[in-house]
Length: 122
Image (cartoon, rainbow, N blue to C red; front, side, top):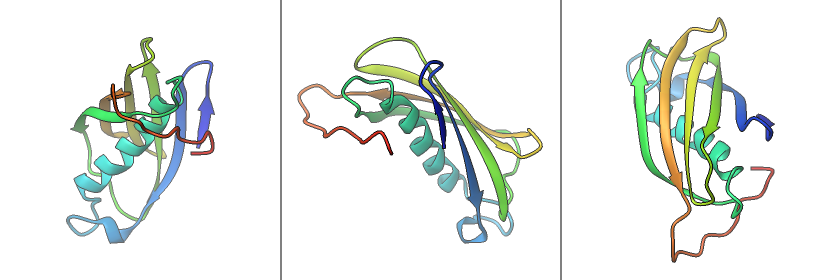
């Protein structure tokens, strides 16, 4: 995981194996959504002064099959300003740059709920 705090960008390299296949040789869409939710969340949490937050909305656009047994690049970028609400956009790409999935998520720091801060190493 590589993070640029100046640009609010996060880049991750992941390996998606056969155990998360939906159809043989194709990664299950729910597994992809989980991975993207986690990486988008990492990007958002690093922008909040409270260093915590939750997913309020997650949109996925599946562009091409994500094959199992391969390495992928996940690129995330935070948008906007605010201490409690941030949008993050991201993509899951093959190593050749082909975009398999585009994602957009809204993260919030809930009012009246005590959430512990997430460590910077997360």
